[in-house]
Structures are given as C-alpha cells and as structure tokens.
Image (tube, rainbow, N blue to C red):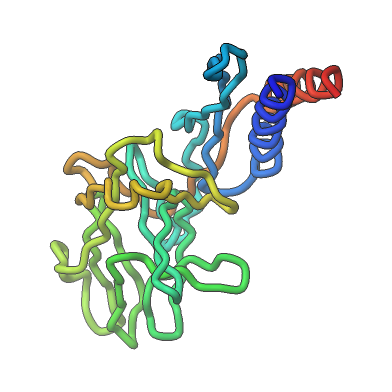
Length: 225
C-alpha cells in the first residue's frame, strides 16, 4: 500500500540517521544524509523513495604522530582487500604491519590488505616516511634516509560517481552491484587528495542536529503505525 511505501521510507532514513550516531567516533566514517523523493506508482498512488548522499565535509584530520596513521587531505579512498579477494574502500587510515611486513587494516578479527600491496622489506627498519604523494622512504639503523623517491607508492581510488557508494560498518565502503568497475586508481596529488602521515580522519558533524533529525523521523514513523 501507499502507507507501506511511506513507512518503509521513514524506516530506511531512520536507520541511516541511527548509524550516523553509532559511528560518530569511528575513524574514517563519513556521515550519510538521507533525502526523500516523491514518486507515483503506475496506478497513480504517491509514495516516497529514499536516497542518500555522503557528506565528505563531515570529517576532519586529527594529528596522532603515529607513523602508520595515514589521513587523506582531499578526495579519494584507500583500497583494501580481504582474504577472499573482496575489495573495500576506506578513509580509515590506521594501518599496521602484518607478520609478513605488509600494510594492513585490522577490522575486528580479520586483516584487510592495502591494495596494491605494500611490503616493507627491511628487518632493521627504524623509521618510515610516507610523502604527501604516497611515496615510501625508509630510515634504517645502518643507513640514513634513502629512497626519497621510493619505488613503492600508496595509491588512492576515486569512484566515478559518489552516488553508487554504499556505506558499510567501521568506516568501510563498497560500490553498489553493477558499478564495481566504475573506479579510478590514481596517485595522491594527481587528481586525488594527498596523504598526511601521522594523522587520522575522524568524524566531525553536528550530533545534536543528527539526534533531532532522528527524533523527527521516529515520531513520523510512530504516527503512521
């Protein structure tokens, strides 16, 4: 029924607002903004569809000083891959070294590998520098800083359209089915943002405003039930 169409729309928007609040302190999470579009069925009955847009201004960089914390200044995402080959996008740049010295994200009880993979092949590694353009250089106990224009480089990805990004848990994103290949892989500073080492992206948006919008939606849902 038309009533169901409207109620479903409110419930979806409510879920989005709740997730914003639940993830408000999760590194790399970007606020999602729901909005309604009024449509008409074939027999002339009005109903609402819910769409959403990702608010790329809803986060800020926090300086941590941790060498493998990487923030993105400007557009773009890190691409990470799980053990099954499934790819995700994220701005949650709290990386670590795996037992194989590969850069990974720890997501609960699993590892997500930075893609393309970056391996640190130095047993005596004392320090690592990652430039704004994503190039890695190393400082070892025996050597001074070398490989200033290192061959290893972190790349970023840019979806062709942000409309097809789906928000997942823990600051992860995916492209919606049918749009998985609509993606550009690009070097930082070459159309994507730049990388800031020792910084982490954290959400920054109006929590009171988000709570107020959620209360309004919950009230609308109750009034129709």
